[in-house]
Image 1: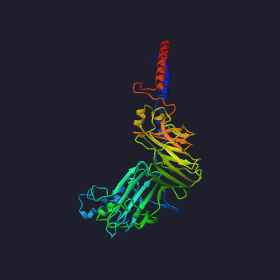
Image 2: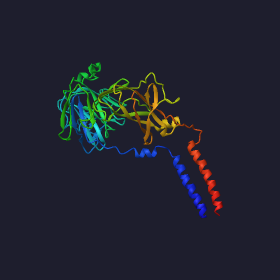
Image 3: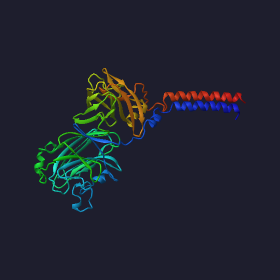
Image 4: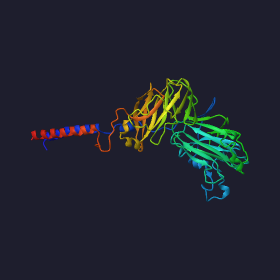
Length: 443
């Protein structure tokens, strides 16, 4: 091959490389650089009313399941009856009679939230407790469920959905009840427990209790948060009637309280300054196809309340983009009118494929003056079955997910490459013809 031919081919190769780079999927490189490893928080607090205390997880070299060591006839079928009496065997050194214990556990499976009611085989009289746990990350699940087995005598109720988990326990004398939640608690979080002890339990007044010969109207008299040394932890007394928030950070950070109501989540923020970044779980706006996962709020001065629901404001159209139904939406009623937010949301890749768009053609829209306004949206992660995005908004009235304004969908019969790829191929063809002509001249 002549020197002229080599020069021509080199020129073509340079243009081909540039053209191919130009038609590569957008956002992939950004996704790698914008997804640093999440660091584990180094401080936690427990809050109730005006009380705030720094706390530490109880650390062991096992999982939270082994730490709790719940035993019944299904979990330990090979043990004799006296060694599987429907209780927590792993926390007996922490249990106290007629006392409910709350703690964080740090083990080989990360950080968990643990609750143990009463004391095993120590003359306790049983009891009834209901916990509504709100503000949970999407990954959080009940890992330990004390008294989850199939028998007519088991009346404990469990639930888990969106940002909340629920349990209502009823146990007999000499045994424990409780559970543990694991997943999503290794990063920043704030979780509120709305308690219902004794007469405030959802079981109280239920006629079903009249048929339970083993229940003897026992009561929980104390509620404590355990912190520090696993063998001899510090104990912070809690009010049985007031909600408790466990969160990352320090007592100097803004406090957060969650509550759940039918159709939404109520969020209270206190002690914030306009420069603080307050991260909250919106709680609704999730579906099988997408979820609005977190709001990082700034511009809050003092206190703020947010009531988040599925209801769309009446003055807004159902969708901001043609006939594509939004996969996730939420409405926020708030007194923090000057607040702005970085919104994190996730969209399932199947939905993106079904509507015929690319991953980087999805956007968040915010309601402004009765219209849907697209927000500055960035694709930050492609974990496989879903895409994670961040968007910047100045209005919190309503948020929804839809194709971006400049999205160019394709149908199944269209070419695999978008128009930019087709144009690049045409240009490459022209360059190849030019290269051949130069090669002939150089002979």
